[in-house]
Amino acid sequence: MPKSARAFWLPRRGHSPAEYEDAFAQREAAGRYAVADGASEGCFSDLWAKLLVESFVDSTGDPPESWPESLTTAQQRWDSDVRARNIPWYAEQSVSQGAHCTFLGLVFASPAADCCQWQALAVGDTCLLHTRGGVLLRAFPLDRAEQFDNFPKLVGSRTPVAEVCAGQSLWADGRGQPGDRLWMMTDALAHFCLGQAEAGGKPWDEWETFLAAAEAQKPFVSWIERLRDAGRLRNDDVTLLAIEL
Image (cartoon, rainbow, N blue to C red; front, side, top):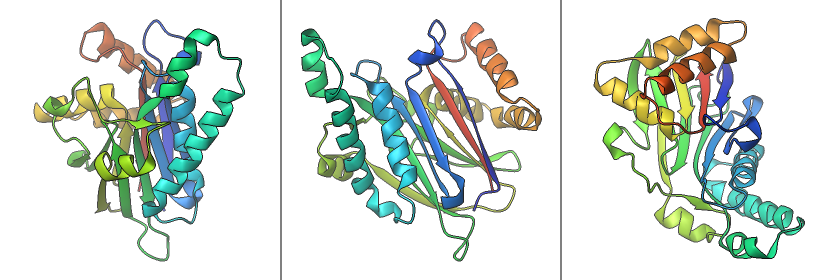
C-alpha cells in the first residue's frame, strides 16, 4: 500500500469553506482514494461529490470493476438526503435534474500482490499525475493543457449507471516504485500543472516543500493565492491529494 497520503484544499476566492464543492476521501488501509469536483450549476453538487467519493472508498474489498455498485449506492443516498429536505417549489425542477460532478477514483493492489500496482477510474477532467524523481511519467485522463474545456464529462446523481459506464468513464492502470508520487487534483490545478509541464516546469517540486512543513496547508494556500493574484490559475475550488508510494 502507499506510504502516506495528504490532502490540500481551498474554495474559490470570494467563497467560504461551506461553499467548497470539491470532495475527497481516502481509506489508506484499503488502498482506495477518490476526488470529485461538483458542477456549480448543479443542485446540491457538494453533497453529490461528497457521497460519490465516500461510496467509492468505502467499497473495501471490492475490485475496481465494481464501481457501478458504489455509484448506485451514492445515487440512492443523494436522493434520500435531498428528499428529506424542505425544498422550495422553485427548486424542484433542479432537484429532478440532479447534481453532477467529475470524478477520479484510485485503487491499489493488495500487499499480497504488488504494493505499487494501481488502477484508476475517471469521468471528466479531475486528473491523476504520476511523478518519479520530479519527472512526470503519466497524466490521466487528460495529458495536455489544451484538452481542458468548459464541458467535461460528468457523473450525474440521476444519470443511469449503464450510461455512465458505457460512454463516460475511462480506465487506466500503472505500476510505481517506492518513492514515486501520485497526485490527484481537480481541473483548475491540473490545467495549470500540465501547462507548466509542457513549458518545462515542475510545480510538484514545490509541493514537496509543502509536504515537509509541519502545517502543510498554510504554504499550499499561500502558493495558490499567489497564482490567482498573478492570473495564472483560474479562480475555482482547488483540491490536491498527494500520495507517496
